[in-house]
Image (cartoon, rainbow, N blue to C red; front, top):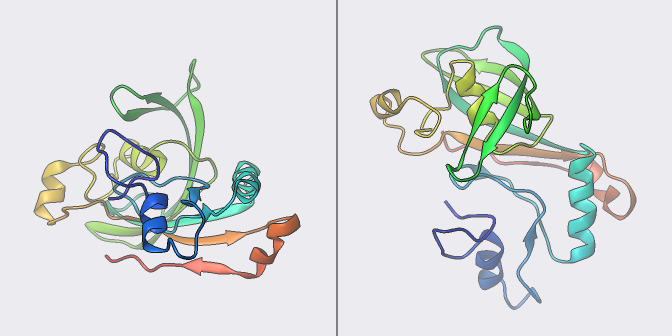
Length: 197
């Protein structure tokens, strides 16, 4: 519920919130190196200086940072493990995206890998991103008929209410690294955060 970047809702960003809580140890507000949608919870990398932010953003561009998500979706995706490839067109004015099955002008490739961990009327999935598009997991899962539980933007509002899902059931649950240079000390580390659902 806290934004990575300033937005129309106002309020402090994640970096500002962190700075306020740790002002005695920080010289300025840390800056996110990537972003999570406002209703998504989980692990987020922030940098304390510009050099680190640039190095981390470059690592994301080169796919040297692996983000793994856990989510709950409606139904059971088939097959139980797959790589989804589609094209996403962003509509900034409407604050949403549209998923296409074929390339089109202005559309960006979106590749999402999922694995069913627990099958049922509501299934638990592990999801890995191979690209980082706006609302990628939410939009692609809805596109194949298995929207993320609690997602009223792309999902099934009635199903969400029937399952008492008042929030998005999507967590950035793990970060691992294949870094170079000064950030290579991260290669031995794996950060995890169990979902609250």
